[in-house]
View 1: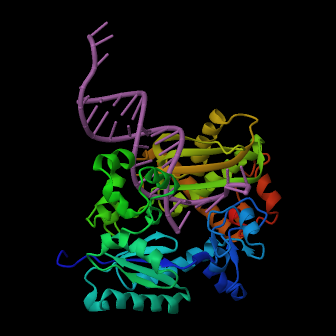
View 2: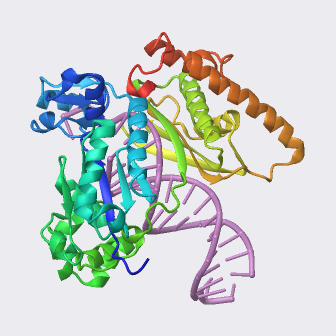
View 3: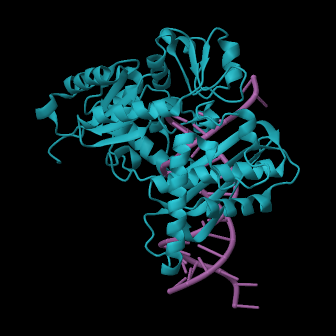
Length: 415
DNA sequence: TCTGGGGTCCTAGGACCC
DNA sequence: TCTGGGGTCCTAGGACCC
């Protein structure tokens, strides 16, 4: 193990959502494309084609802003199922190259290629082969960064885009990082960038001029590790963590933003029911039980609160999640204040809980059977075909209003 | 510029325990 | 009875990423 120098690949798919949409509609190729919703909708850009980016469009930009920047862009609804499917294909290709694969998100992954020279050749050649295989198997372009740590691999893949490969040779890390904008470091966002600017730090190399205690006070452990990296050290923490270690999910959530803010308590609670069902379903699919149930509530003026409660026993039942989240909602909602967004979030997972009382367990089993059946019916006939809230007055009014057929795929938010 | 949805990780204070 | 020092759990919020 230690006789080898660590070789990490970061594989990042190019304009992933846009490229997948192009597979389904080749006429989009080469055009300004914006994925995420229609030009007049409440929402943000999920992905923009390189053509659209030339006009200043980028992800997270409000759709309406994107339409102003690039009026001739084609606006496309997102299709999460398609991306998930393609992502699985991507994973298969990666997994055929290295058993140590960690998907960092739907469109990027880390591979530990340490000690694979005999099998794949030197890093650049291995990357080239991986790149070609990816294109052949998925028809998608990717960029690959190679380095001795995740950080270096990640930063170099960004600079290899589009459709390129970049290897930072061992020993060259500090030299590579020094001239980069601090914003190019993953984890440095708007806020930290401003803080760093105040300290006179604009490039990664400027970090070297800072005192250790300044770094520690202002930026905690993370800042220390970053400075270490800037000096070319093995910084520990996420930067140097094992690829593929513990990728168990930590939380599951669903949220919904209304097209029109509302203060109708029936509508709000039926949304909470629907979100609870979606969350419960995911828990069951993953064989997980959650202890902590959290409500997210955003008002018209964008002020946002979260309220959480931890159960004595973990659950995966829609109804238990719903009752908790409804209690939190009733206790905290500023009545009559219009709501923009509601969310249901669960965490504190236990695997299959062996500690449920025997008496309880037959009841839980029955519920589980019923719910699994309901999950299957939803697969067959659509999300609105069956609901525990079926008898609830005003239930699902919102969806039936927005999506009368109850069909999936009409807009991202309804997926 | 009127701001999605799904995540991860970190911080900080208070409760509670030893 | 003028106040220690962990450790852990819980909750709330926020930065950040894709």
